[in-house]
Every structure is written in structure tokens, then in C-alpha cells.
Amino acid sequence: MTEDATAATETGGTEAGEAAAGRGERIAKWLARAGVASRRDAEKLLADGVVAVNGAVVTHPATFIDPSDIVQVRGAVVDAPDRTRLWRYHKPEGLVTTHRDPQGRPTVFDRLPPGLPRVVSVGRLDLNSEGLLLLTNDGALARRLELPANGWTRRYRVRVYGEIDNRALGSLVRGVVVEGVRYGPIEAMLDARTGTNSWLSVALKEGRNREVRKVMAHLGLQVTRLIRVAYGPFQLGNLERSAVDEITGKVLREQLSEVGKPDALRPGAAKPGAPRPGRP
Picture (cartoon, helix red, strand yellow):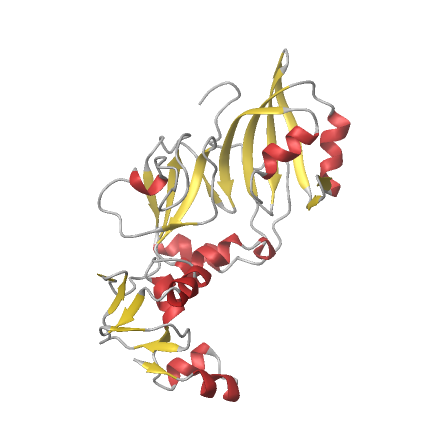
């Protein structure tokens, strides 16, 4: 384990250069790849003084980890990072997407099938939302896939209560301001209507906290069910509730090579494998 913040800054060396120089891997990235937390959250763990290397507490992000080092977080030994892996998970409603909930509500990570390594989620689905949630053992990958700049579209099937104004739905493609917050382009199309209940197909790229619910409320519509059916190229398909399915290494590598390339918001593109209106 080495610590050399000044040298890294003065030389302007990249992480690849640092690794080539035999310095190992920065601890925040190492923890992220080990699935402990995102890089940003790993840096918070360091600042909190809960990370130790070879028995000594470390707080500086410019600490480098060698294969022989023993890393602990809150006293628990962290296994060395495995190869990067990604899973599809069909999140049921009633679970929060967090490792620890102050209110004691059941979490996604409490209910995962046994045998999975420690994983983090790519983004979140709120308590009452369901559908596709990507899980990975690599926190750095999770952060990469969450960034709107990477261009992956999130697609949803949304049941709403209220009168549909097709012109208002169409205007969302230009973005909308709700309570002072500017949301980017959203594709929203009416799929089916029964009385005052309707099913919509919704696609967006930002994925802000409760974005779909807030925007629909802005249009006078109450969301009564929200199902994410796709995240970028990965679809929910027929994956059963609470089931987990690992994405093969070959598919993962192919899709990661596409990250950052244009992914236009195309209405209805996620319909194959999506639940039909009125059905789970």
C-alpha cells in the first residue's frame, strides 16, 4: 500500500500510468470495483475513517492498493474485486433501493437470492416502482451507466389516472419545468385507455428522483403503477418478479462498447417483452 497524492498531481499521471508504474490501484476505484460503493461513496467512507489497509486506517483517496494488501471496511475484510459482472433484476414494489434504510423498510438487497456477491444498483427505483433494475459488482461501472451523458434511455410502462391531453404529452419531448426543476426531453405515448385509467409508454434519459411521477402530476395525472421495462439495451422481458439473471460477459462487453453513442428516444421501442396494459 502506498500513498502519493502530491506526485500523482504534479506529474498529471493517469490511473493507467499509475498502474503501469507499479503503484497499484487507487483505493476508491478498488472499493468500487469490489462492489462496496460507488467511487464517490467510497471517498466518503475514507473520510469517515472506516477503511483500513493492512490494519491501519486510511483516509486519503490517493492510497494505492496492491494485490497483497488486506482491505477492511468497518472491520470486515473486503474480497479483492472479481471480474466485472452485471445482472438484470425484476424489482417488485414495496422494496427500497438502498443497502440500509433508516426507517427499517425492506430493501432490494435484503431480498436478493442467495449466492450473489455484494452488488450495487445502477440507479434506483423508488418504493412503489417495479421492473428492471441492473445490479453490478463494480461500483465504477454503476456510476458510468447512471450518467445521462452516456446516453442510455430508460423506458417505462406507466398506468395513470386522469384525463389524457395528447398535446400536453407530446410537448414533453421539448422538456418541461416542474416546480423550478428543468427536466430533459421525455417521450410519452398513450397505449390504451379504459375510462379514466390509461397506460402510457414513457422514455427518458435523465432518470431523476421520481421524475416520471412528478412530471405526470404536473400534467394532472396520478401514477398508479410504474414499471421500468428497459435500461439502455437491457430489457425486463419475461423475467419473473424477484428473479435475477446474469448478463453474459460477451453481451456485457458488446454493450459497454456502445456506451456514449447516440440512443434516440424512440416511442414504443421497449414494448417487446413489456407487460401489456392492465396486466403485471
